[in-house]
Length: 239
Image (tube, rainbow, N blue to C red; front, side, top):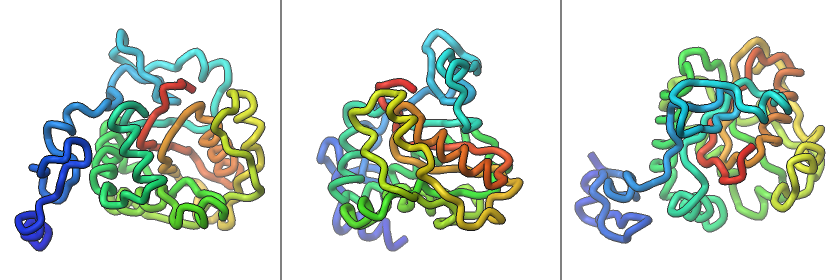
């Protein structure tokens, strides 16, 4: 009720077109929302979530057969292009934190469409390095994962997974370099939190899937039964 009243007094401007938002409590208007590049919920690879327009059923793509990832399933909400790309970059690097509810809407939608939510035993954010947290002032994945867990009604654990070491930035590296770069960069401080559970990792952008695969490898070594992931965006560079 308070949010609706504030919307009447100070209308929220749409992040994309700048006009007053017609969606209560949100910063993307209905018209711009419909234009966002959502990833289809059908015709996707069962493992990495890559979609093929001509297919309307699940399959395992050639890349996942050749370089079998350690995660069991990934679902991405948006393509990392156009307005979705700018929104993600502004949220991550320019602290447009008011976009959180709009972004969590997208994550919740794809999670409910492509995952068996009731089987999720734990939700956790993709951890970031201490340097990145200091540079940005927050972990954007943590900021998305906690409200998502609440909406899905699943347990949330911020510190169930952590980063170790100092890998290079993944940007600019080829697929093999990305896999090598993230080897051994995760640790599970409390294996009892993940043991025998289906763990859902929340990440912002998926490119090759190397980081998520290494994350899943570490979680499974600590006893996780399955590792699923939802990502806000999927890069044009397929994994």
